[in-house]
Every structure is written in C-alpha cells, then in structure tokens.
Image 1 (cartoon, rainbow, N blue to C red):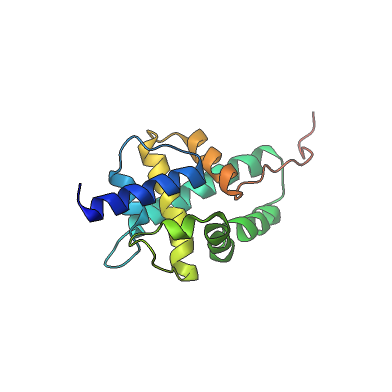
Image 2 (cartoon, rainbow, N blue to C red):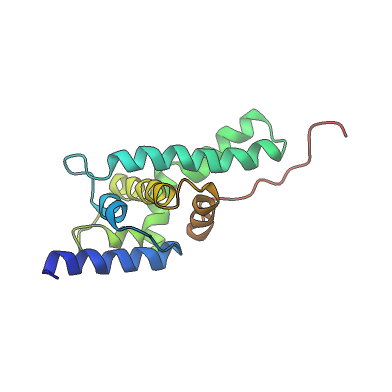
Length: 151
C-alpha cells in the first residue's frame, strides 16, 4: 500500500468514526472526502443535499407542521452555515483529502452533503441509514408537533 492509499484509509477510518457508519466500498468515500477541486465531491454533495431534505421533510409532514415551519427548519438545520459548523465541531472537516487541508466554510458544508450522499449510495439507498448519520452528526431533529388534522 502506497502513502496516498494509507492516507485515504486513515481519513476513511476517522470519517467512519465520526459519522457512525461503516462503508461497504471505499469508492464513494474517496469521492466524498475529495474536496470540490475540478468536480471532486460536488455530485455527491448535490445528492446528499436532496436526501437530507427528504429525511427532514418526512418528519415535518407527519408532524403536521405548517409550511412556514418547513422553511425555518430547513434553514436552521440544513443551511451551509449550520452544515459547516457541524463539519468543524464533529471533526468531519479534518477528514478531507488531502489530509491536513483546512476547509473553507463552503467546502466543509459541501463535505457534509457529500458524505450523506455517499452513505445513501453505499447503503443501497437506505434512507434510515441517512437519518441515522444525520442524527449522529446532530443535523436531524425529529419534528414533534400536534397534528393539525382532525381525528
């Protein structure tokens, strides 16, 4: 195993420890952790962003919340500002490839989205895995509101 492969393996292990998910394949891990230089993790980030929306909207809808509550919930939890904060606070940002690179806030937010996208694909499109990783990272709050529908 060469130096670059060892570095990737270290970063993968650190990332898996942070998110509480073990990958079946490292193909998506490397893509997710490679910063968006010349494309990098951008495609996985777009996928992850959509899947995080899906995970959150399930809770919003079944909780009977108002439309304005969705906008506020999404902005507070899934904004780039919050995702960057999550990346730095959990140590996920330090898992980026190349090792030792200091992510900007935008790169850190994109990294979180890409990791979620990688989990989604690696898990066989299992939304429960996505929700679990979001819970571990602290970006998913279950919306518990009274039902607005009559019984």
